[in-house]
Structures are given as C-alpha cells and as structure tokens.
Image (cartoon, rainbow, N blue to C red; front, side):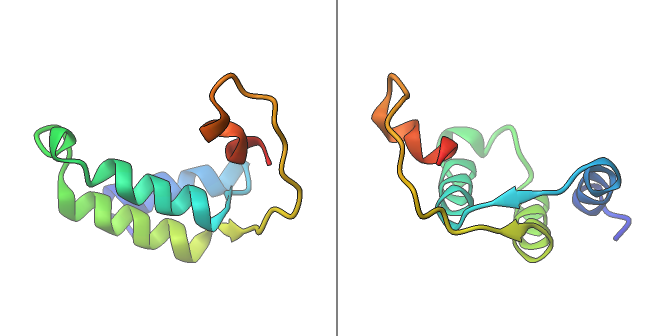
Length: 79
C-alpha cells in the first residue's frame, strides 16, 4: 500500500528478502506494545506494519539452536 508501513516494506523488498521467525515476530509485537513506547509510536501504524510484515515476510522455523550470545535470550535471533 501507500501508507508509511506499506512503503517501508515495499522498499525493503526492492533490495532484499524479509525473513523472520514466529518467535521474533512475536517478540517484535510484544516490544512495540510496551507502555513506555506508546508516546513515541502510532499504534495504528505499528499494527499495520506488523500485519504487512507477517503476511509479506518469508516465515522460517529454525531447527537448530545455537549458544553464542552473551545474553542467552538473544541466541534465537541468530538461530
């Protein structure tokens, strides 16, 4: 679409593939929904962006877990 979220995704797709796991998508939804961010983001645009992202991105389901990050909670990002 021509909305800001649609333009962002469309522009990213012109030069790259968007690849995301369900866990990262869920974490993104959780983080942008935090009360401390509400003053800085437009909830409607964020919801639209997440909807577009979830239907446009290539969804991957990692099968191998790695343990290389200082913060073990971040290992899933590299898996």
